[in-house]
Length: 261
Image (cartoon, rainbow, N blue to C red; front, side, top):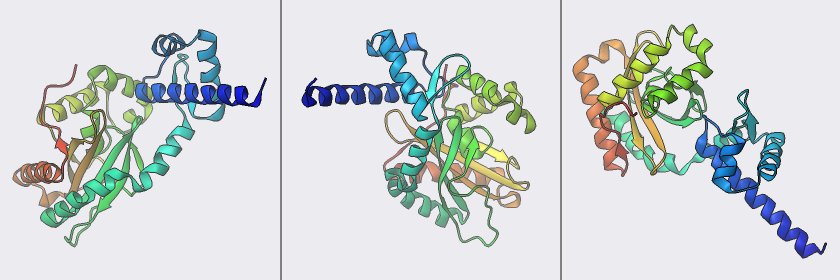
């Protein structure tokens, strides 16, 4: 075989692997089976299986107990590395700074990373009592934080049920049943805003709101403060100014809507 033919074959293999990786990423965390990959790519079954196995060996994909392919640790690490200075942060940081000035409290930016919320940035307001419920770079299971609840509310009931099944032990340790997680998601979806009290730090109340980044991706901002600063009237005001600032800087906040089905 000539060198040029080898190069073409190698390029084709790389292209197929990247196409398959993108496909699996789009289906994460539910994953894809080999038949579903074959249907989506029109590859021969043996070829699809070989490429998927290569991605598993490299750590970019993992094969779960149901023989479905999902993103692996190497893919997650690439995503986290890219988030260290994501374009989203440059675009939304002025809104976060404005919110920190208006509320005088701590503002968090969280993006979804599989089953977890990843804290991308934090802005501190001037109020002397700081409420640090997360650090930049930390991940937390969806539903266990204010912004994470806002992101979880974008999922369908079936997706929330599957999320609970995958992390049942961790949710149970926090006193959260499958029914309670569904209720949290439904309430947040209907109200268009999440509210938590003492879920991470005792005596701290958080208000969170999701917003659209691209046609298919979302992030969330949350405001955290000590309980005596967060009566019902102030929580409502914070939700309003969050929506205003998100909109002012070119993003679309997620409004109250019926739980997605």
